[in-house]
Length: 337
Image (cartoon, rainbow, N blue to C red; front, top):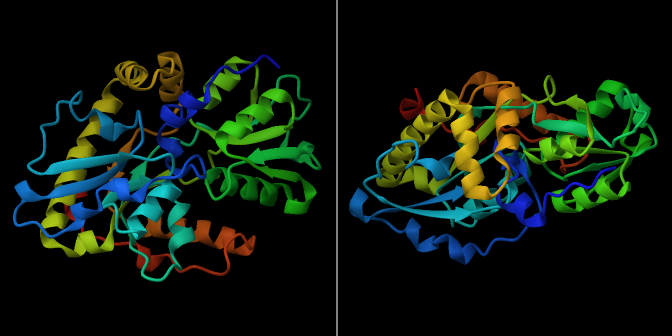
């Protein structure tokens, strides 16, 4: 197979796209660096520091480009490699707000004093989450991968996609050779021929395709397309901080209108921010399954989250059944309508 040139730096800094909200295990985060004192009580919005998680090259980085005015409070943004780390930081009371896939809240739901609350839903792309096979692979269907080495990223959408593909094919976990790898290790293994298939997401998919990899299946029909915006319970309980979070999501919502209006412009500014070729971002935008829409929580979204939790519980990936409803909090709905 032709070598894929995406570097570890590219992968960690810009190759994850919206789908990367579920990424696990890339790096550790110094929670002390997330401005924990920002959670102290403030007398006014002007005194308040809102602690927000971000990913390099993702929408919240482009308020200025989208023409959105500075907020009346201070922002302390911390870059994370994945949604699981954001969930941990929220639970450590080091963050007020962050985004992730449907997966991380399920893994922290049973933790004593869990602070993670789901306050809104970002409808987004699932076509950039795929099952890849190397150039020259004879596989034409997932069943052709029985007994084969399949890479995935543990406790992420990648993990969930693989579970669902096995279900659809009438296969069990023991019918394949699952290989849990971080995305950078998965890339190296895929390049070297050590994997027969790889469940992966984000802009890396498009570079792998350019190098000869073939998409055997996208996540369309498997993933809901729901990406979650979350906040800390204690932040929501603080009236002033709740006001700031509401204002922030109102501004955040406008970024998606700006993105949806011009995919080529979005690709160019992301290239400038991440160093990843704009053509990959442009192709991702062109092939997306849905425009980005930030919405209030809904019964349908809660049901989707419950189905994901039940899938992980049935596969014994989590210790037991999880009732996801207590994770959902509608206090930001008025800001998202």
